[in-house]
Length: 305
Ligand code: ADP
Image (cartoon, rainbow, N blue to C red; front, side, top):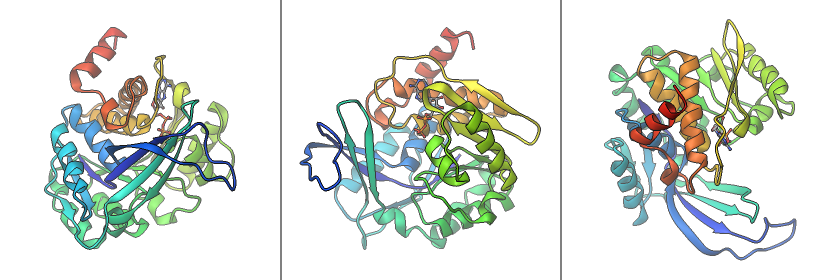
């Protein structure tokens, strides 16, 4: 599986509350951890034992080496992560309040510089790949070119439309095999509020009308709604004691793609995604919360799956 997307340093600060309009808060003791939606999804796949290639860019700072180390430590192949000396690595500032709510601001840096050169490098991997995972922390023109190359090669394109956007190019929808927005992202894409199963069904079907082949709307602790060309169905989440849902969506995408790469049908792949997402929600952090294969298999086995 190829993951083409963002690699960030996450700066995580805890604050008594989130900033109010006009208010300046001091972020104390920033925790520095490897992140980025692309890197998180690559780690999720590799931890499940799937051969995974990361394609992307990091910048000049010394911490960039740590970002690559964390990918390699999880088993992700990083020969196609380019060191771009002319820019800074991507950084995400994450503020978590007392209630566990978070706000995230992403500064793209090197992620914003990926271009056709990276698409060309990525394309060489396509003949040996089953799926390509894309997110929107890299430029939309690059996402489009990568999706085109994958479609031509017959490789499944999975798009996580985060961060949320209201207007994706029409052409992109028709290149996507599976789109996986959460409620907020689905709402932005379709232009109406998505806040439960009924509106998620409408949103998933609206996304199908735009040309995607399958639409999965993630509803956090509730589960997911999936629309395909033949049916729309709901898959419940696994009940767990959630402590931190950061990267639950990335774990979901990793689990989904892992199952598909092993030839499992979409419904079963969604169950894998939901299991990986649920496990990630029970642990603190982004990459630190992503399950290894033994933890994942045990979780499913204990639930009779
Ligand atoms: P995102 O991180 O993209 O916003 P979600 O929060 O919807 O995505 O999480 C993705 C998936 O992870 C959910 O669809 C669900 O299967 C699982 N998940 C997330 N939060 C929980 C939770 N509190 N309990 C159980 N499963 C969860």
